[in-house]
Length: 477
Image 1: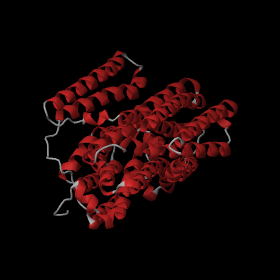
Image 2: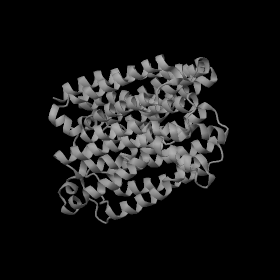
Image 3: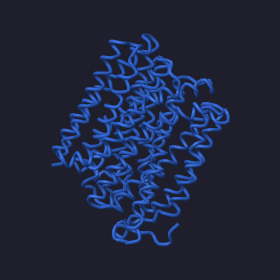
Image 4: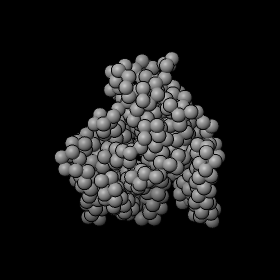
């Protein structure tokens, strides 16, 4: 660890930090790639995990979402701890915990223990990832910050897609005959590399604000509220939607509302709440979070149900289904890297075309399924995936930059935590909702109908993204 930690102002001005900032960005984005990859790498392993551990559909959904929920609810705390205790320190702790948890996931003998290990993995990621945006906010300014945020957004999208492809290759190679367990074991060597690299390259920095006591009640209320919301969405279908599922959803709204009321009370008392409500005085931040909710829930839901359709509906192998995501990844990577140049050349309204491209591609895919059913052309499917990825990539970097544009540097940790929390909550909700629609329809009408009708939900989310972007860009001006 560094003996002298840099404050936000010192970090920006220090020549030593300036010389290291791009190497630092490389190291922290490497870890970001791993953390986001693990949200999606499990997707192509669902069938293998289900068979290997004799688990239910609901349990394999929890294998995916338990990581995301743990990740989401502790992100704000992770950002706050990084601000006060040191961002490098928290990054190293998180990366170490993530590597150990990955090993435990690979060794899990049952679905229940795998879910528990995934929770630990998500908790570790929550300590690690908020330091990424905070470090970018502290070490980069002006045009360079825009470039760094653009790369960050591109890495998130690329990891989301690469998870499916890498998972497919890992399952195909089946190293040492370990099957699905390898999708977790591959994190171990890369985790060690990231730990060593961050020890060498990263400079310590922390907020110059005084250390405050963590708001445990606020954290607990938000955590319980999210669990009450997501649990019935995942487990309700297998239980036949009994009364407790509806009661849980209603109670979730009540608990979250009471939690927010308590946060306002904490703020009035002069203490620091778990959720820094002052950030919501920025309209772009508030509206941007709503766009984030629609955008990321749609993306995660699509990736989840597409894998189910390809493997269980079309009978493709994990590798073949993973490679179907390759055009989507290529489209996303190319357009996200070009996003800043496109905005500069054509104004921020270029993001509208990204949303429209997503909508048109979804409609075309729905039409293709009506026309061809399970005999859908692989060439056309690949082309549409390329267009979907291109649309998604145009949106992500400008969206992040717009949301964080007016946030003060001393609030960067809290803002980064809330923003990243929203992306993870969105992904969990997207998987729960679109997965629920898919499984319900697949039981009665088959996989083609299930996937096609899930796409109508995705189309509604895409429309919300377009409308939200219009309001956000108008406000940003």
